[in-house]
Image (tube, rainbow, N blue to C red; front, side, top):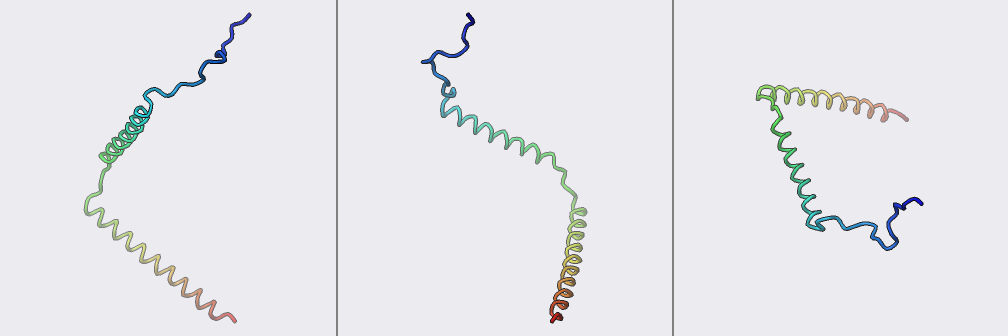
Length: 87
């Protein structure tokens, strides 16, 4: 007869995790600490633009915003005039 691999009827099916609550808390804080360490490492790798590049790109963003704002405002005004003229 083949030996059974099933646990005996009275045997416990699962055990509580080792370390109990303290172990779970230690794992959780270790995970948070690891995430913070990874974040610090990524922030050290950033290459920030110089002041002239920052100024130039800021002016480009402002100019594009003004042009798009004027274009959308113009389209809005034209459509408003068209719908006001409808009977």
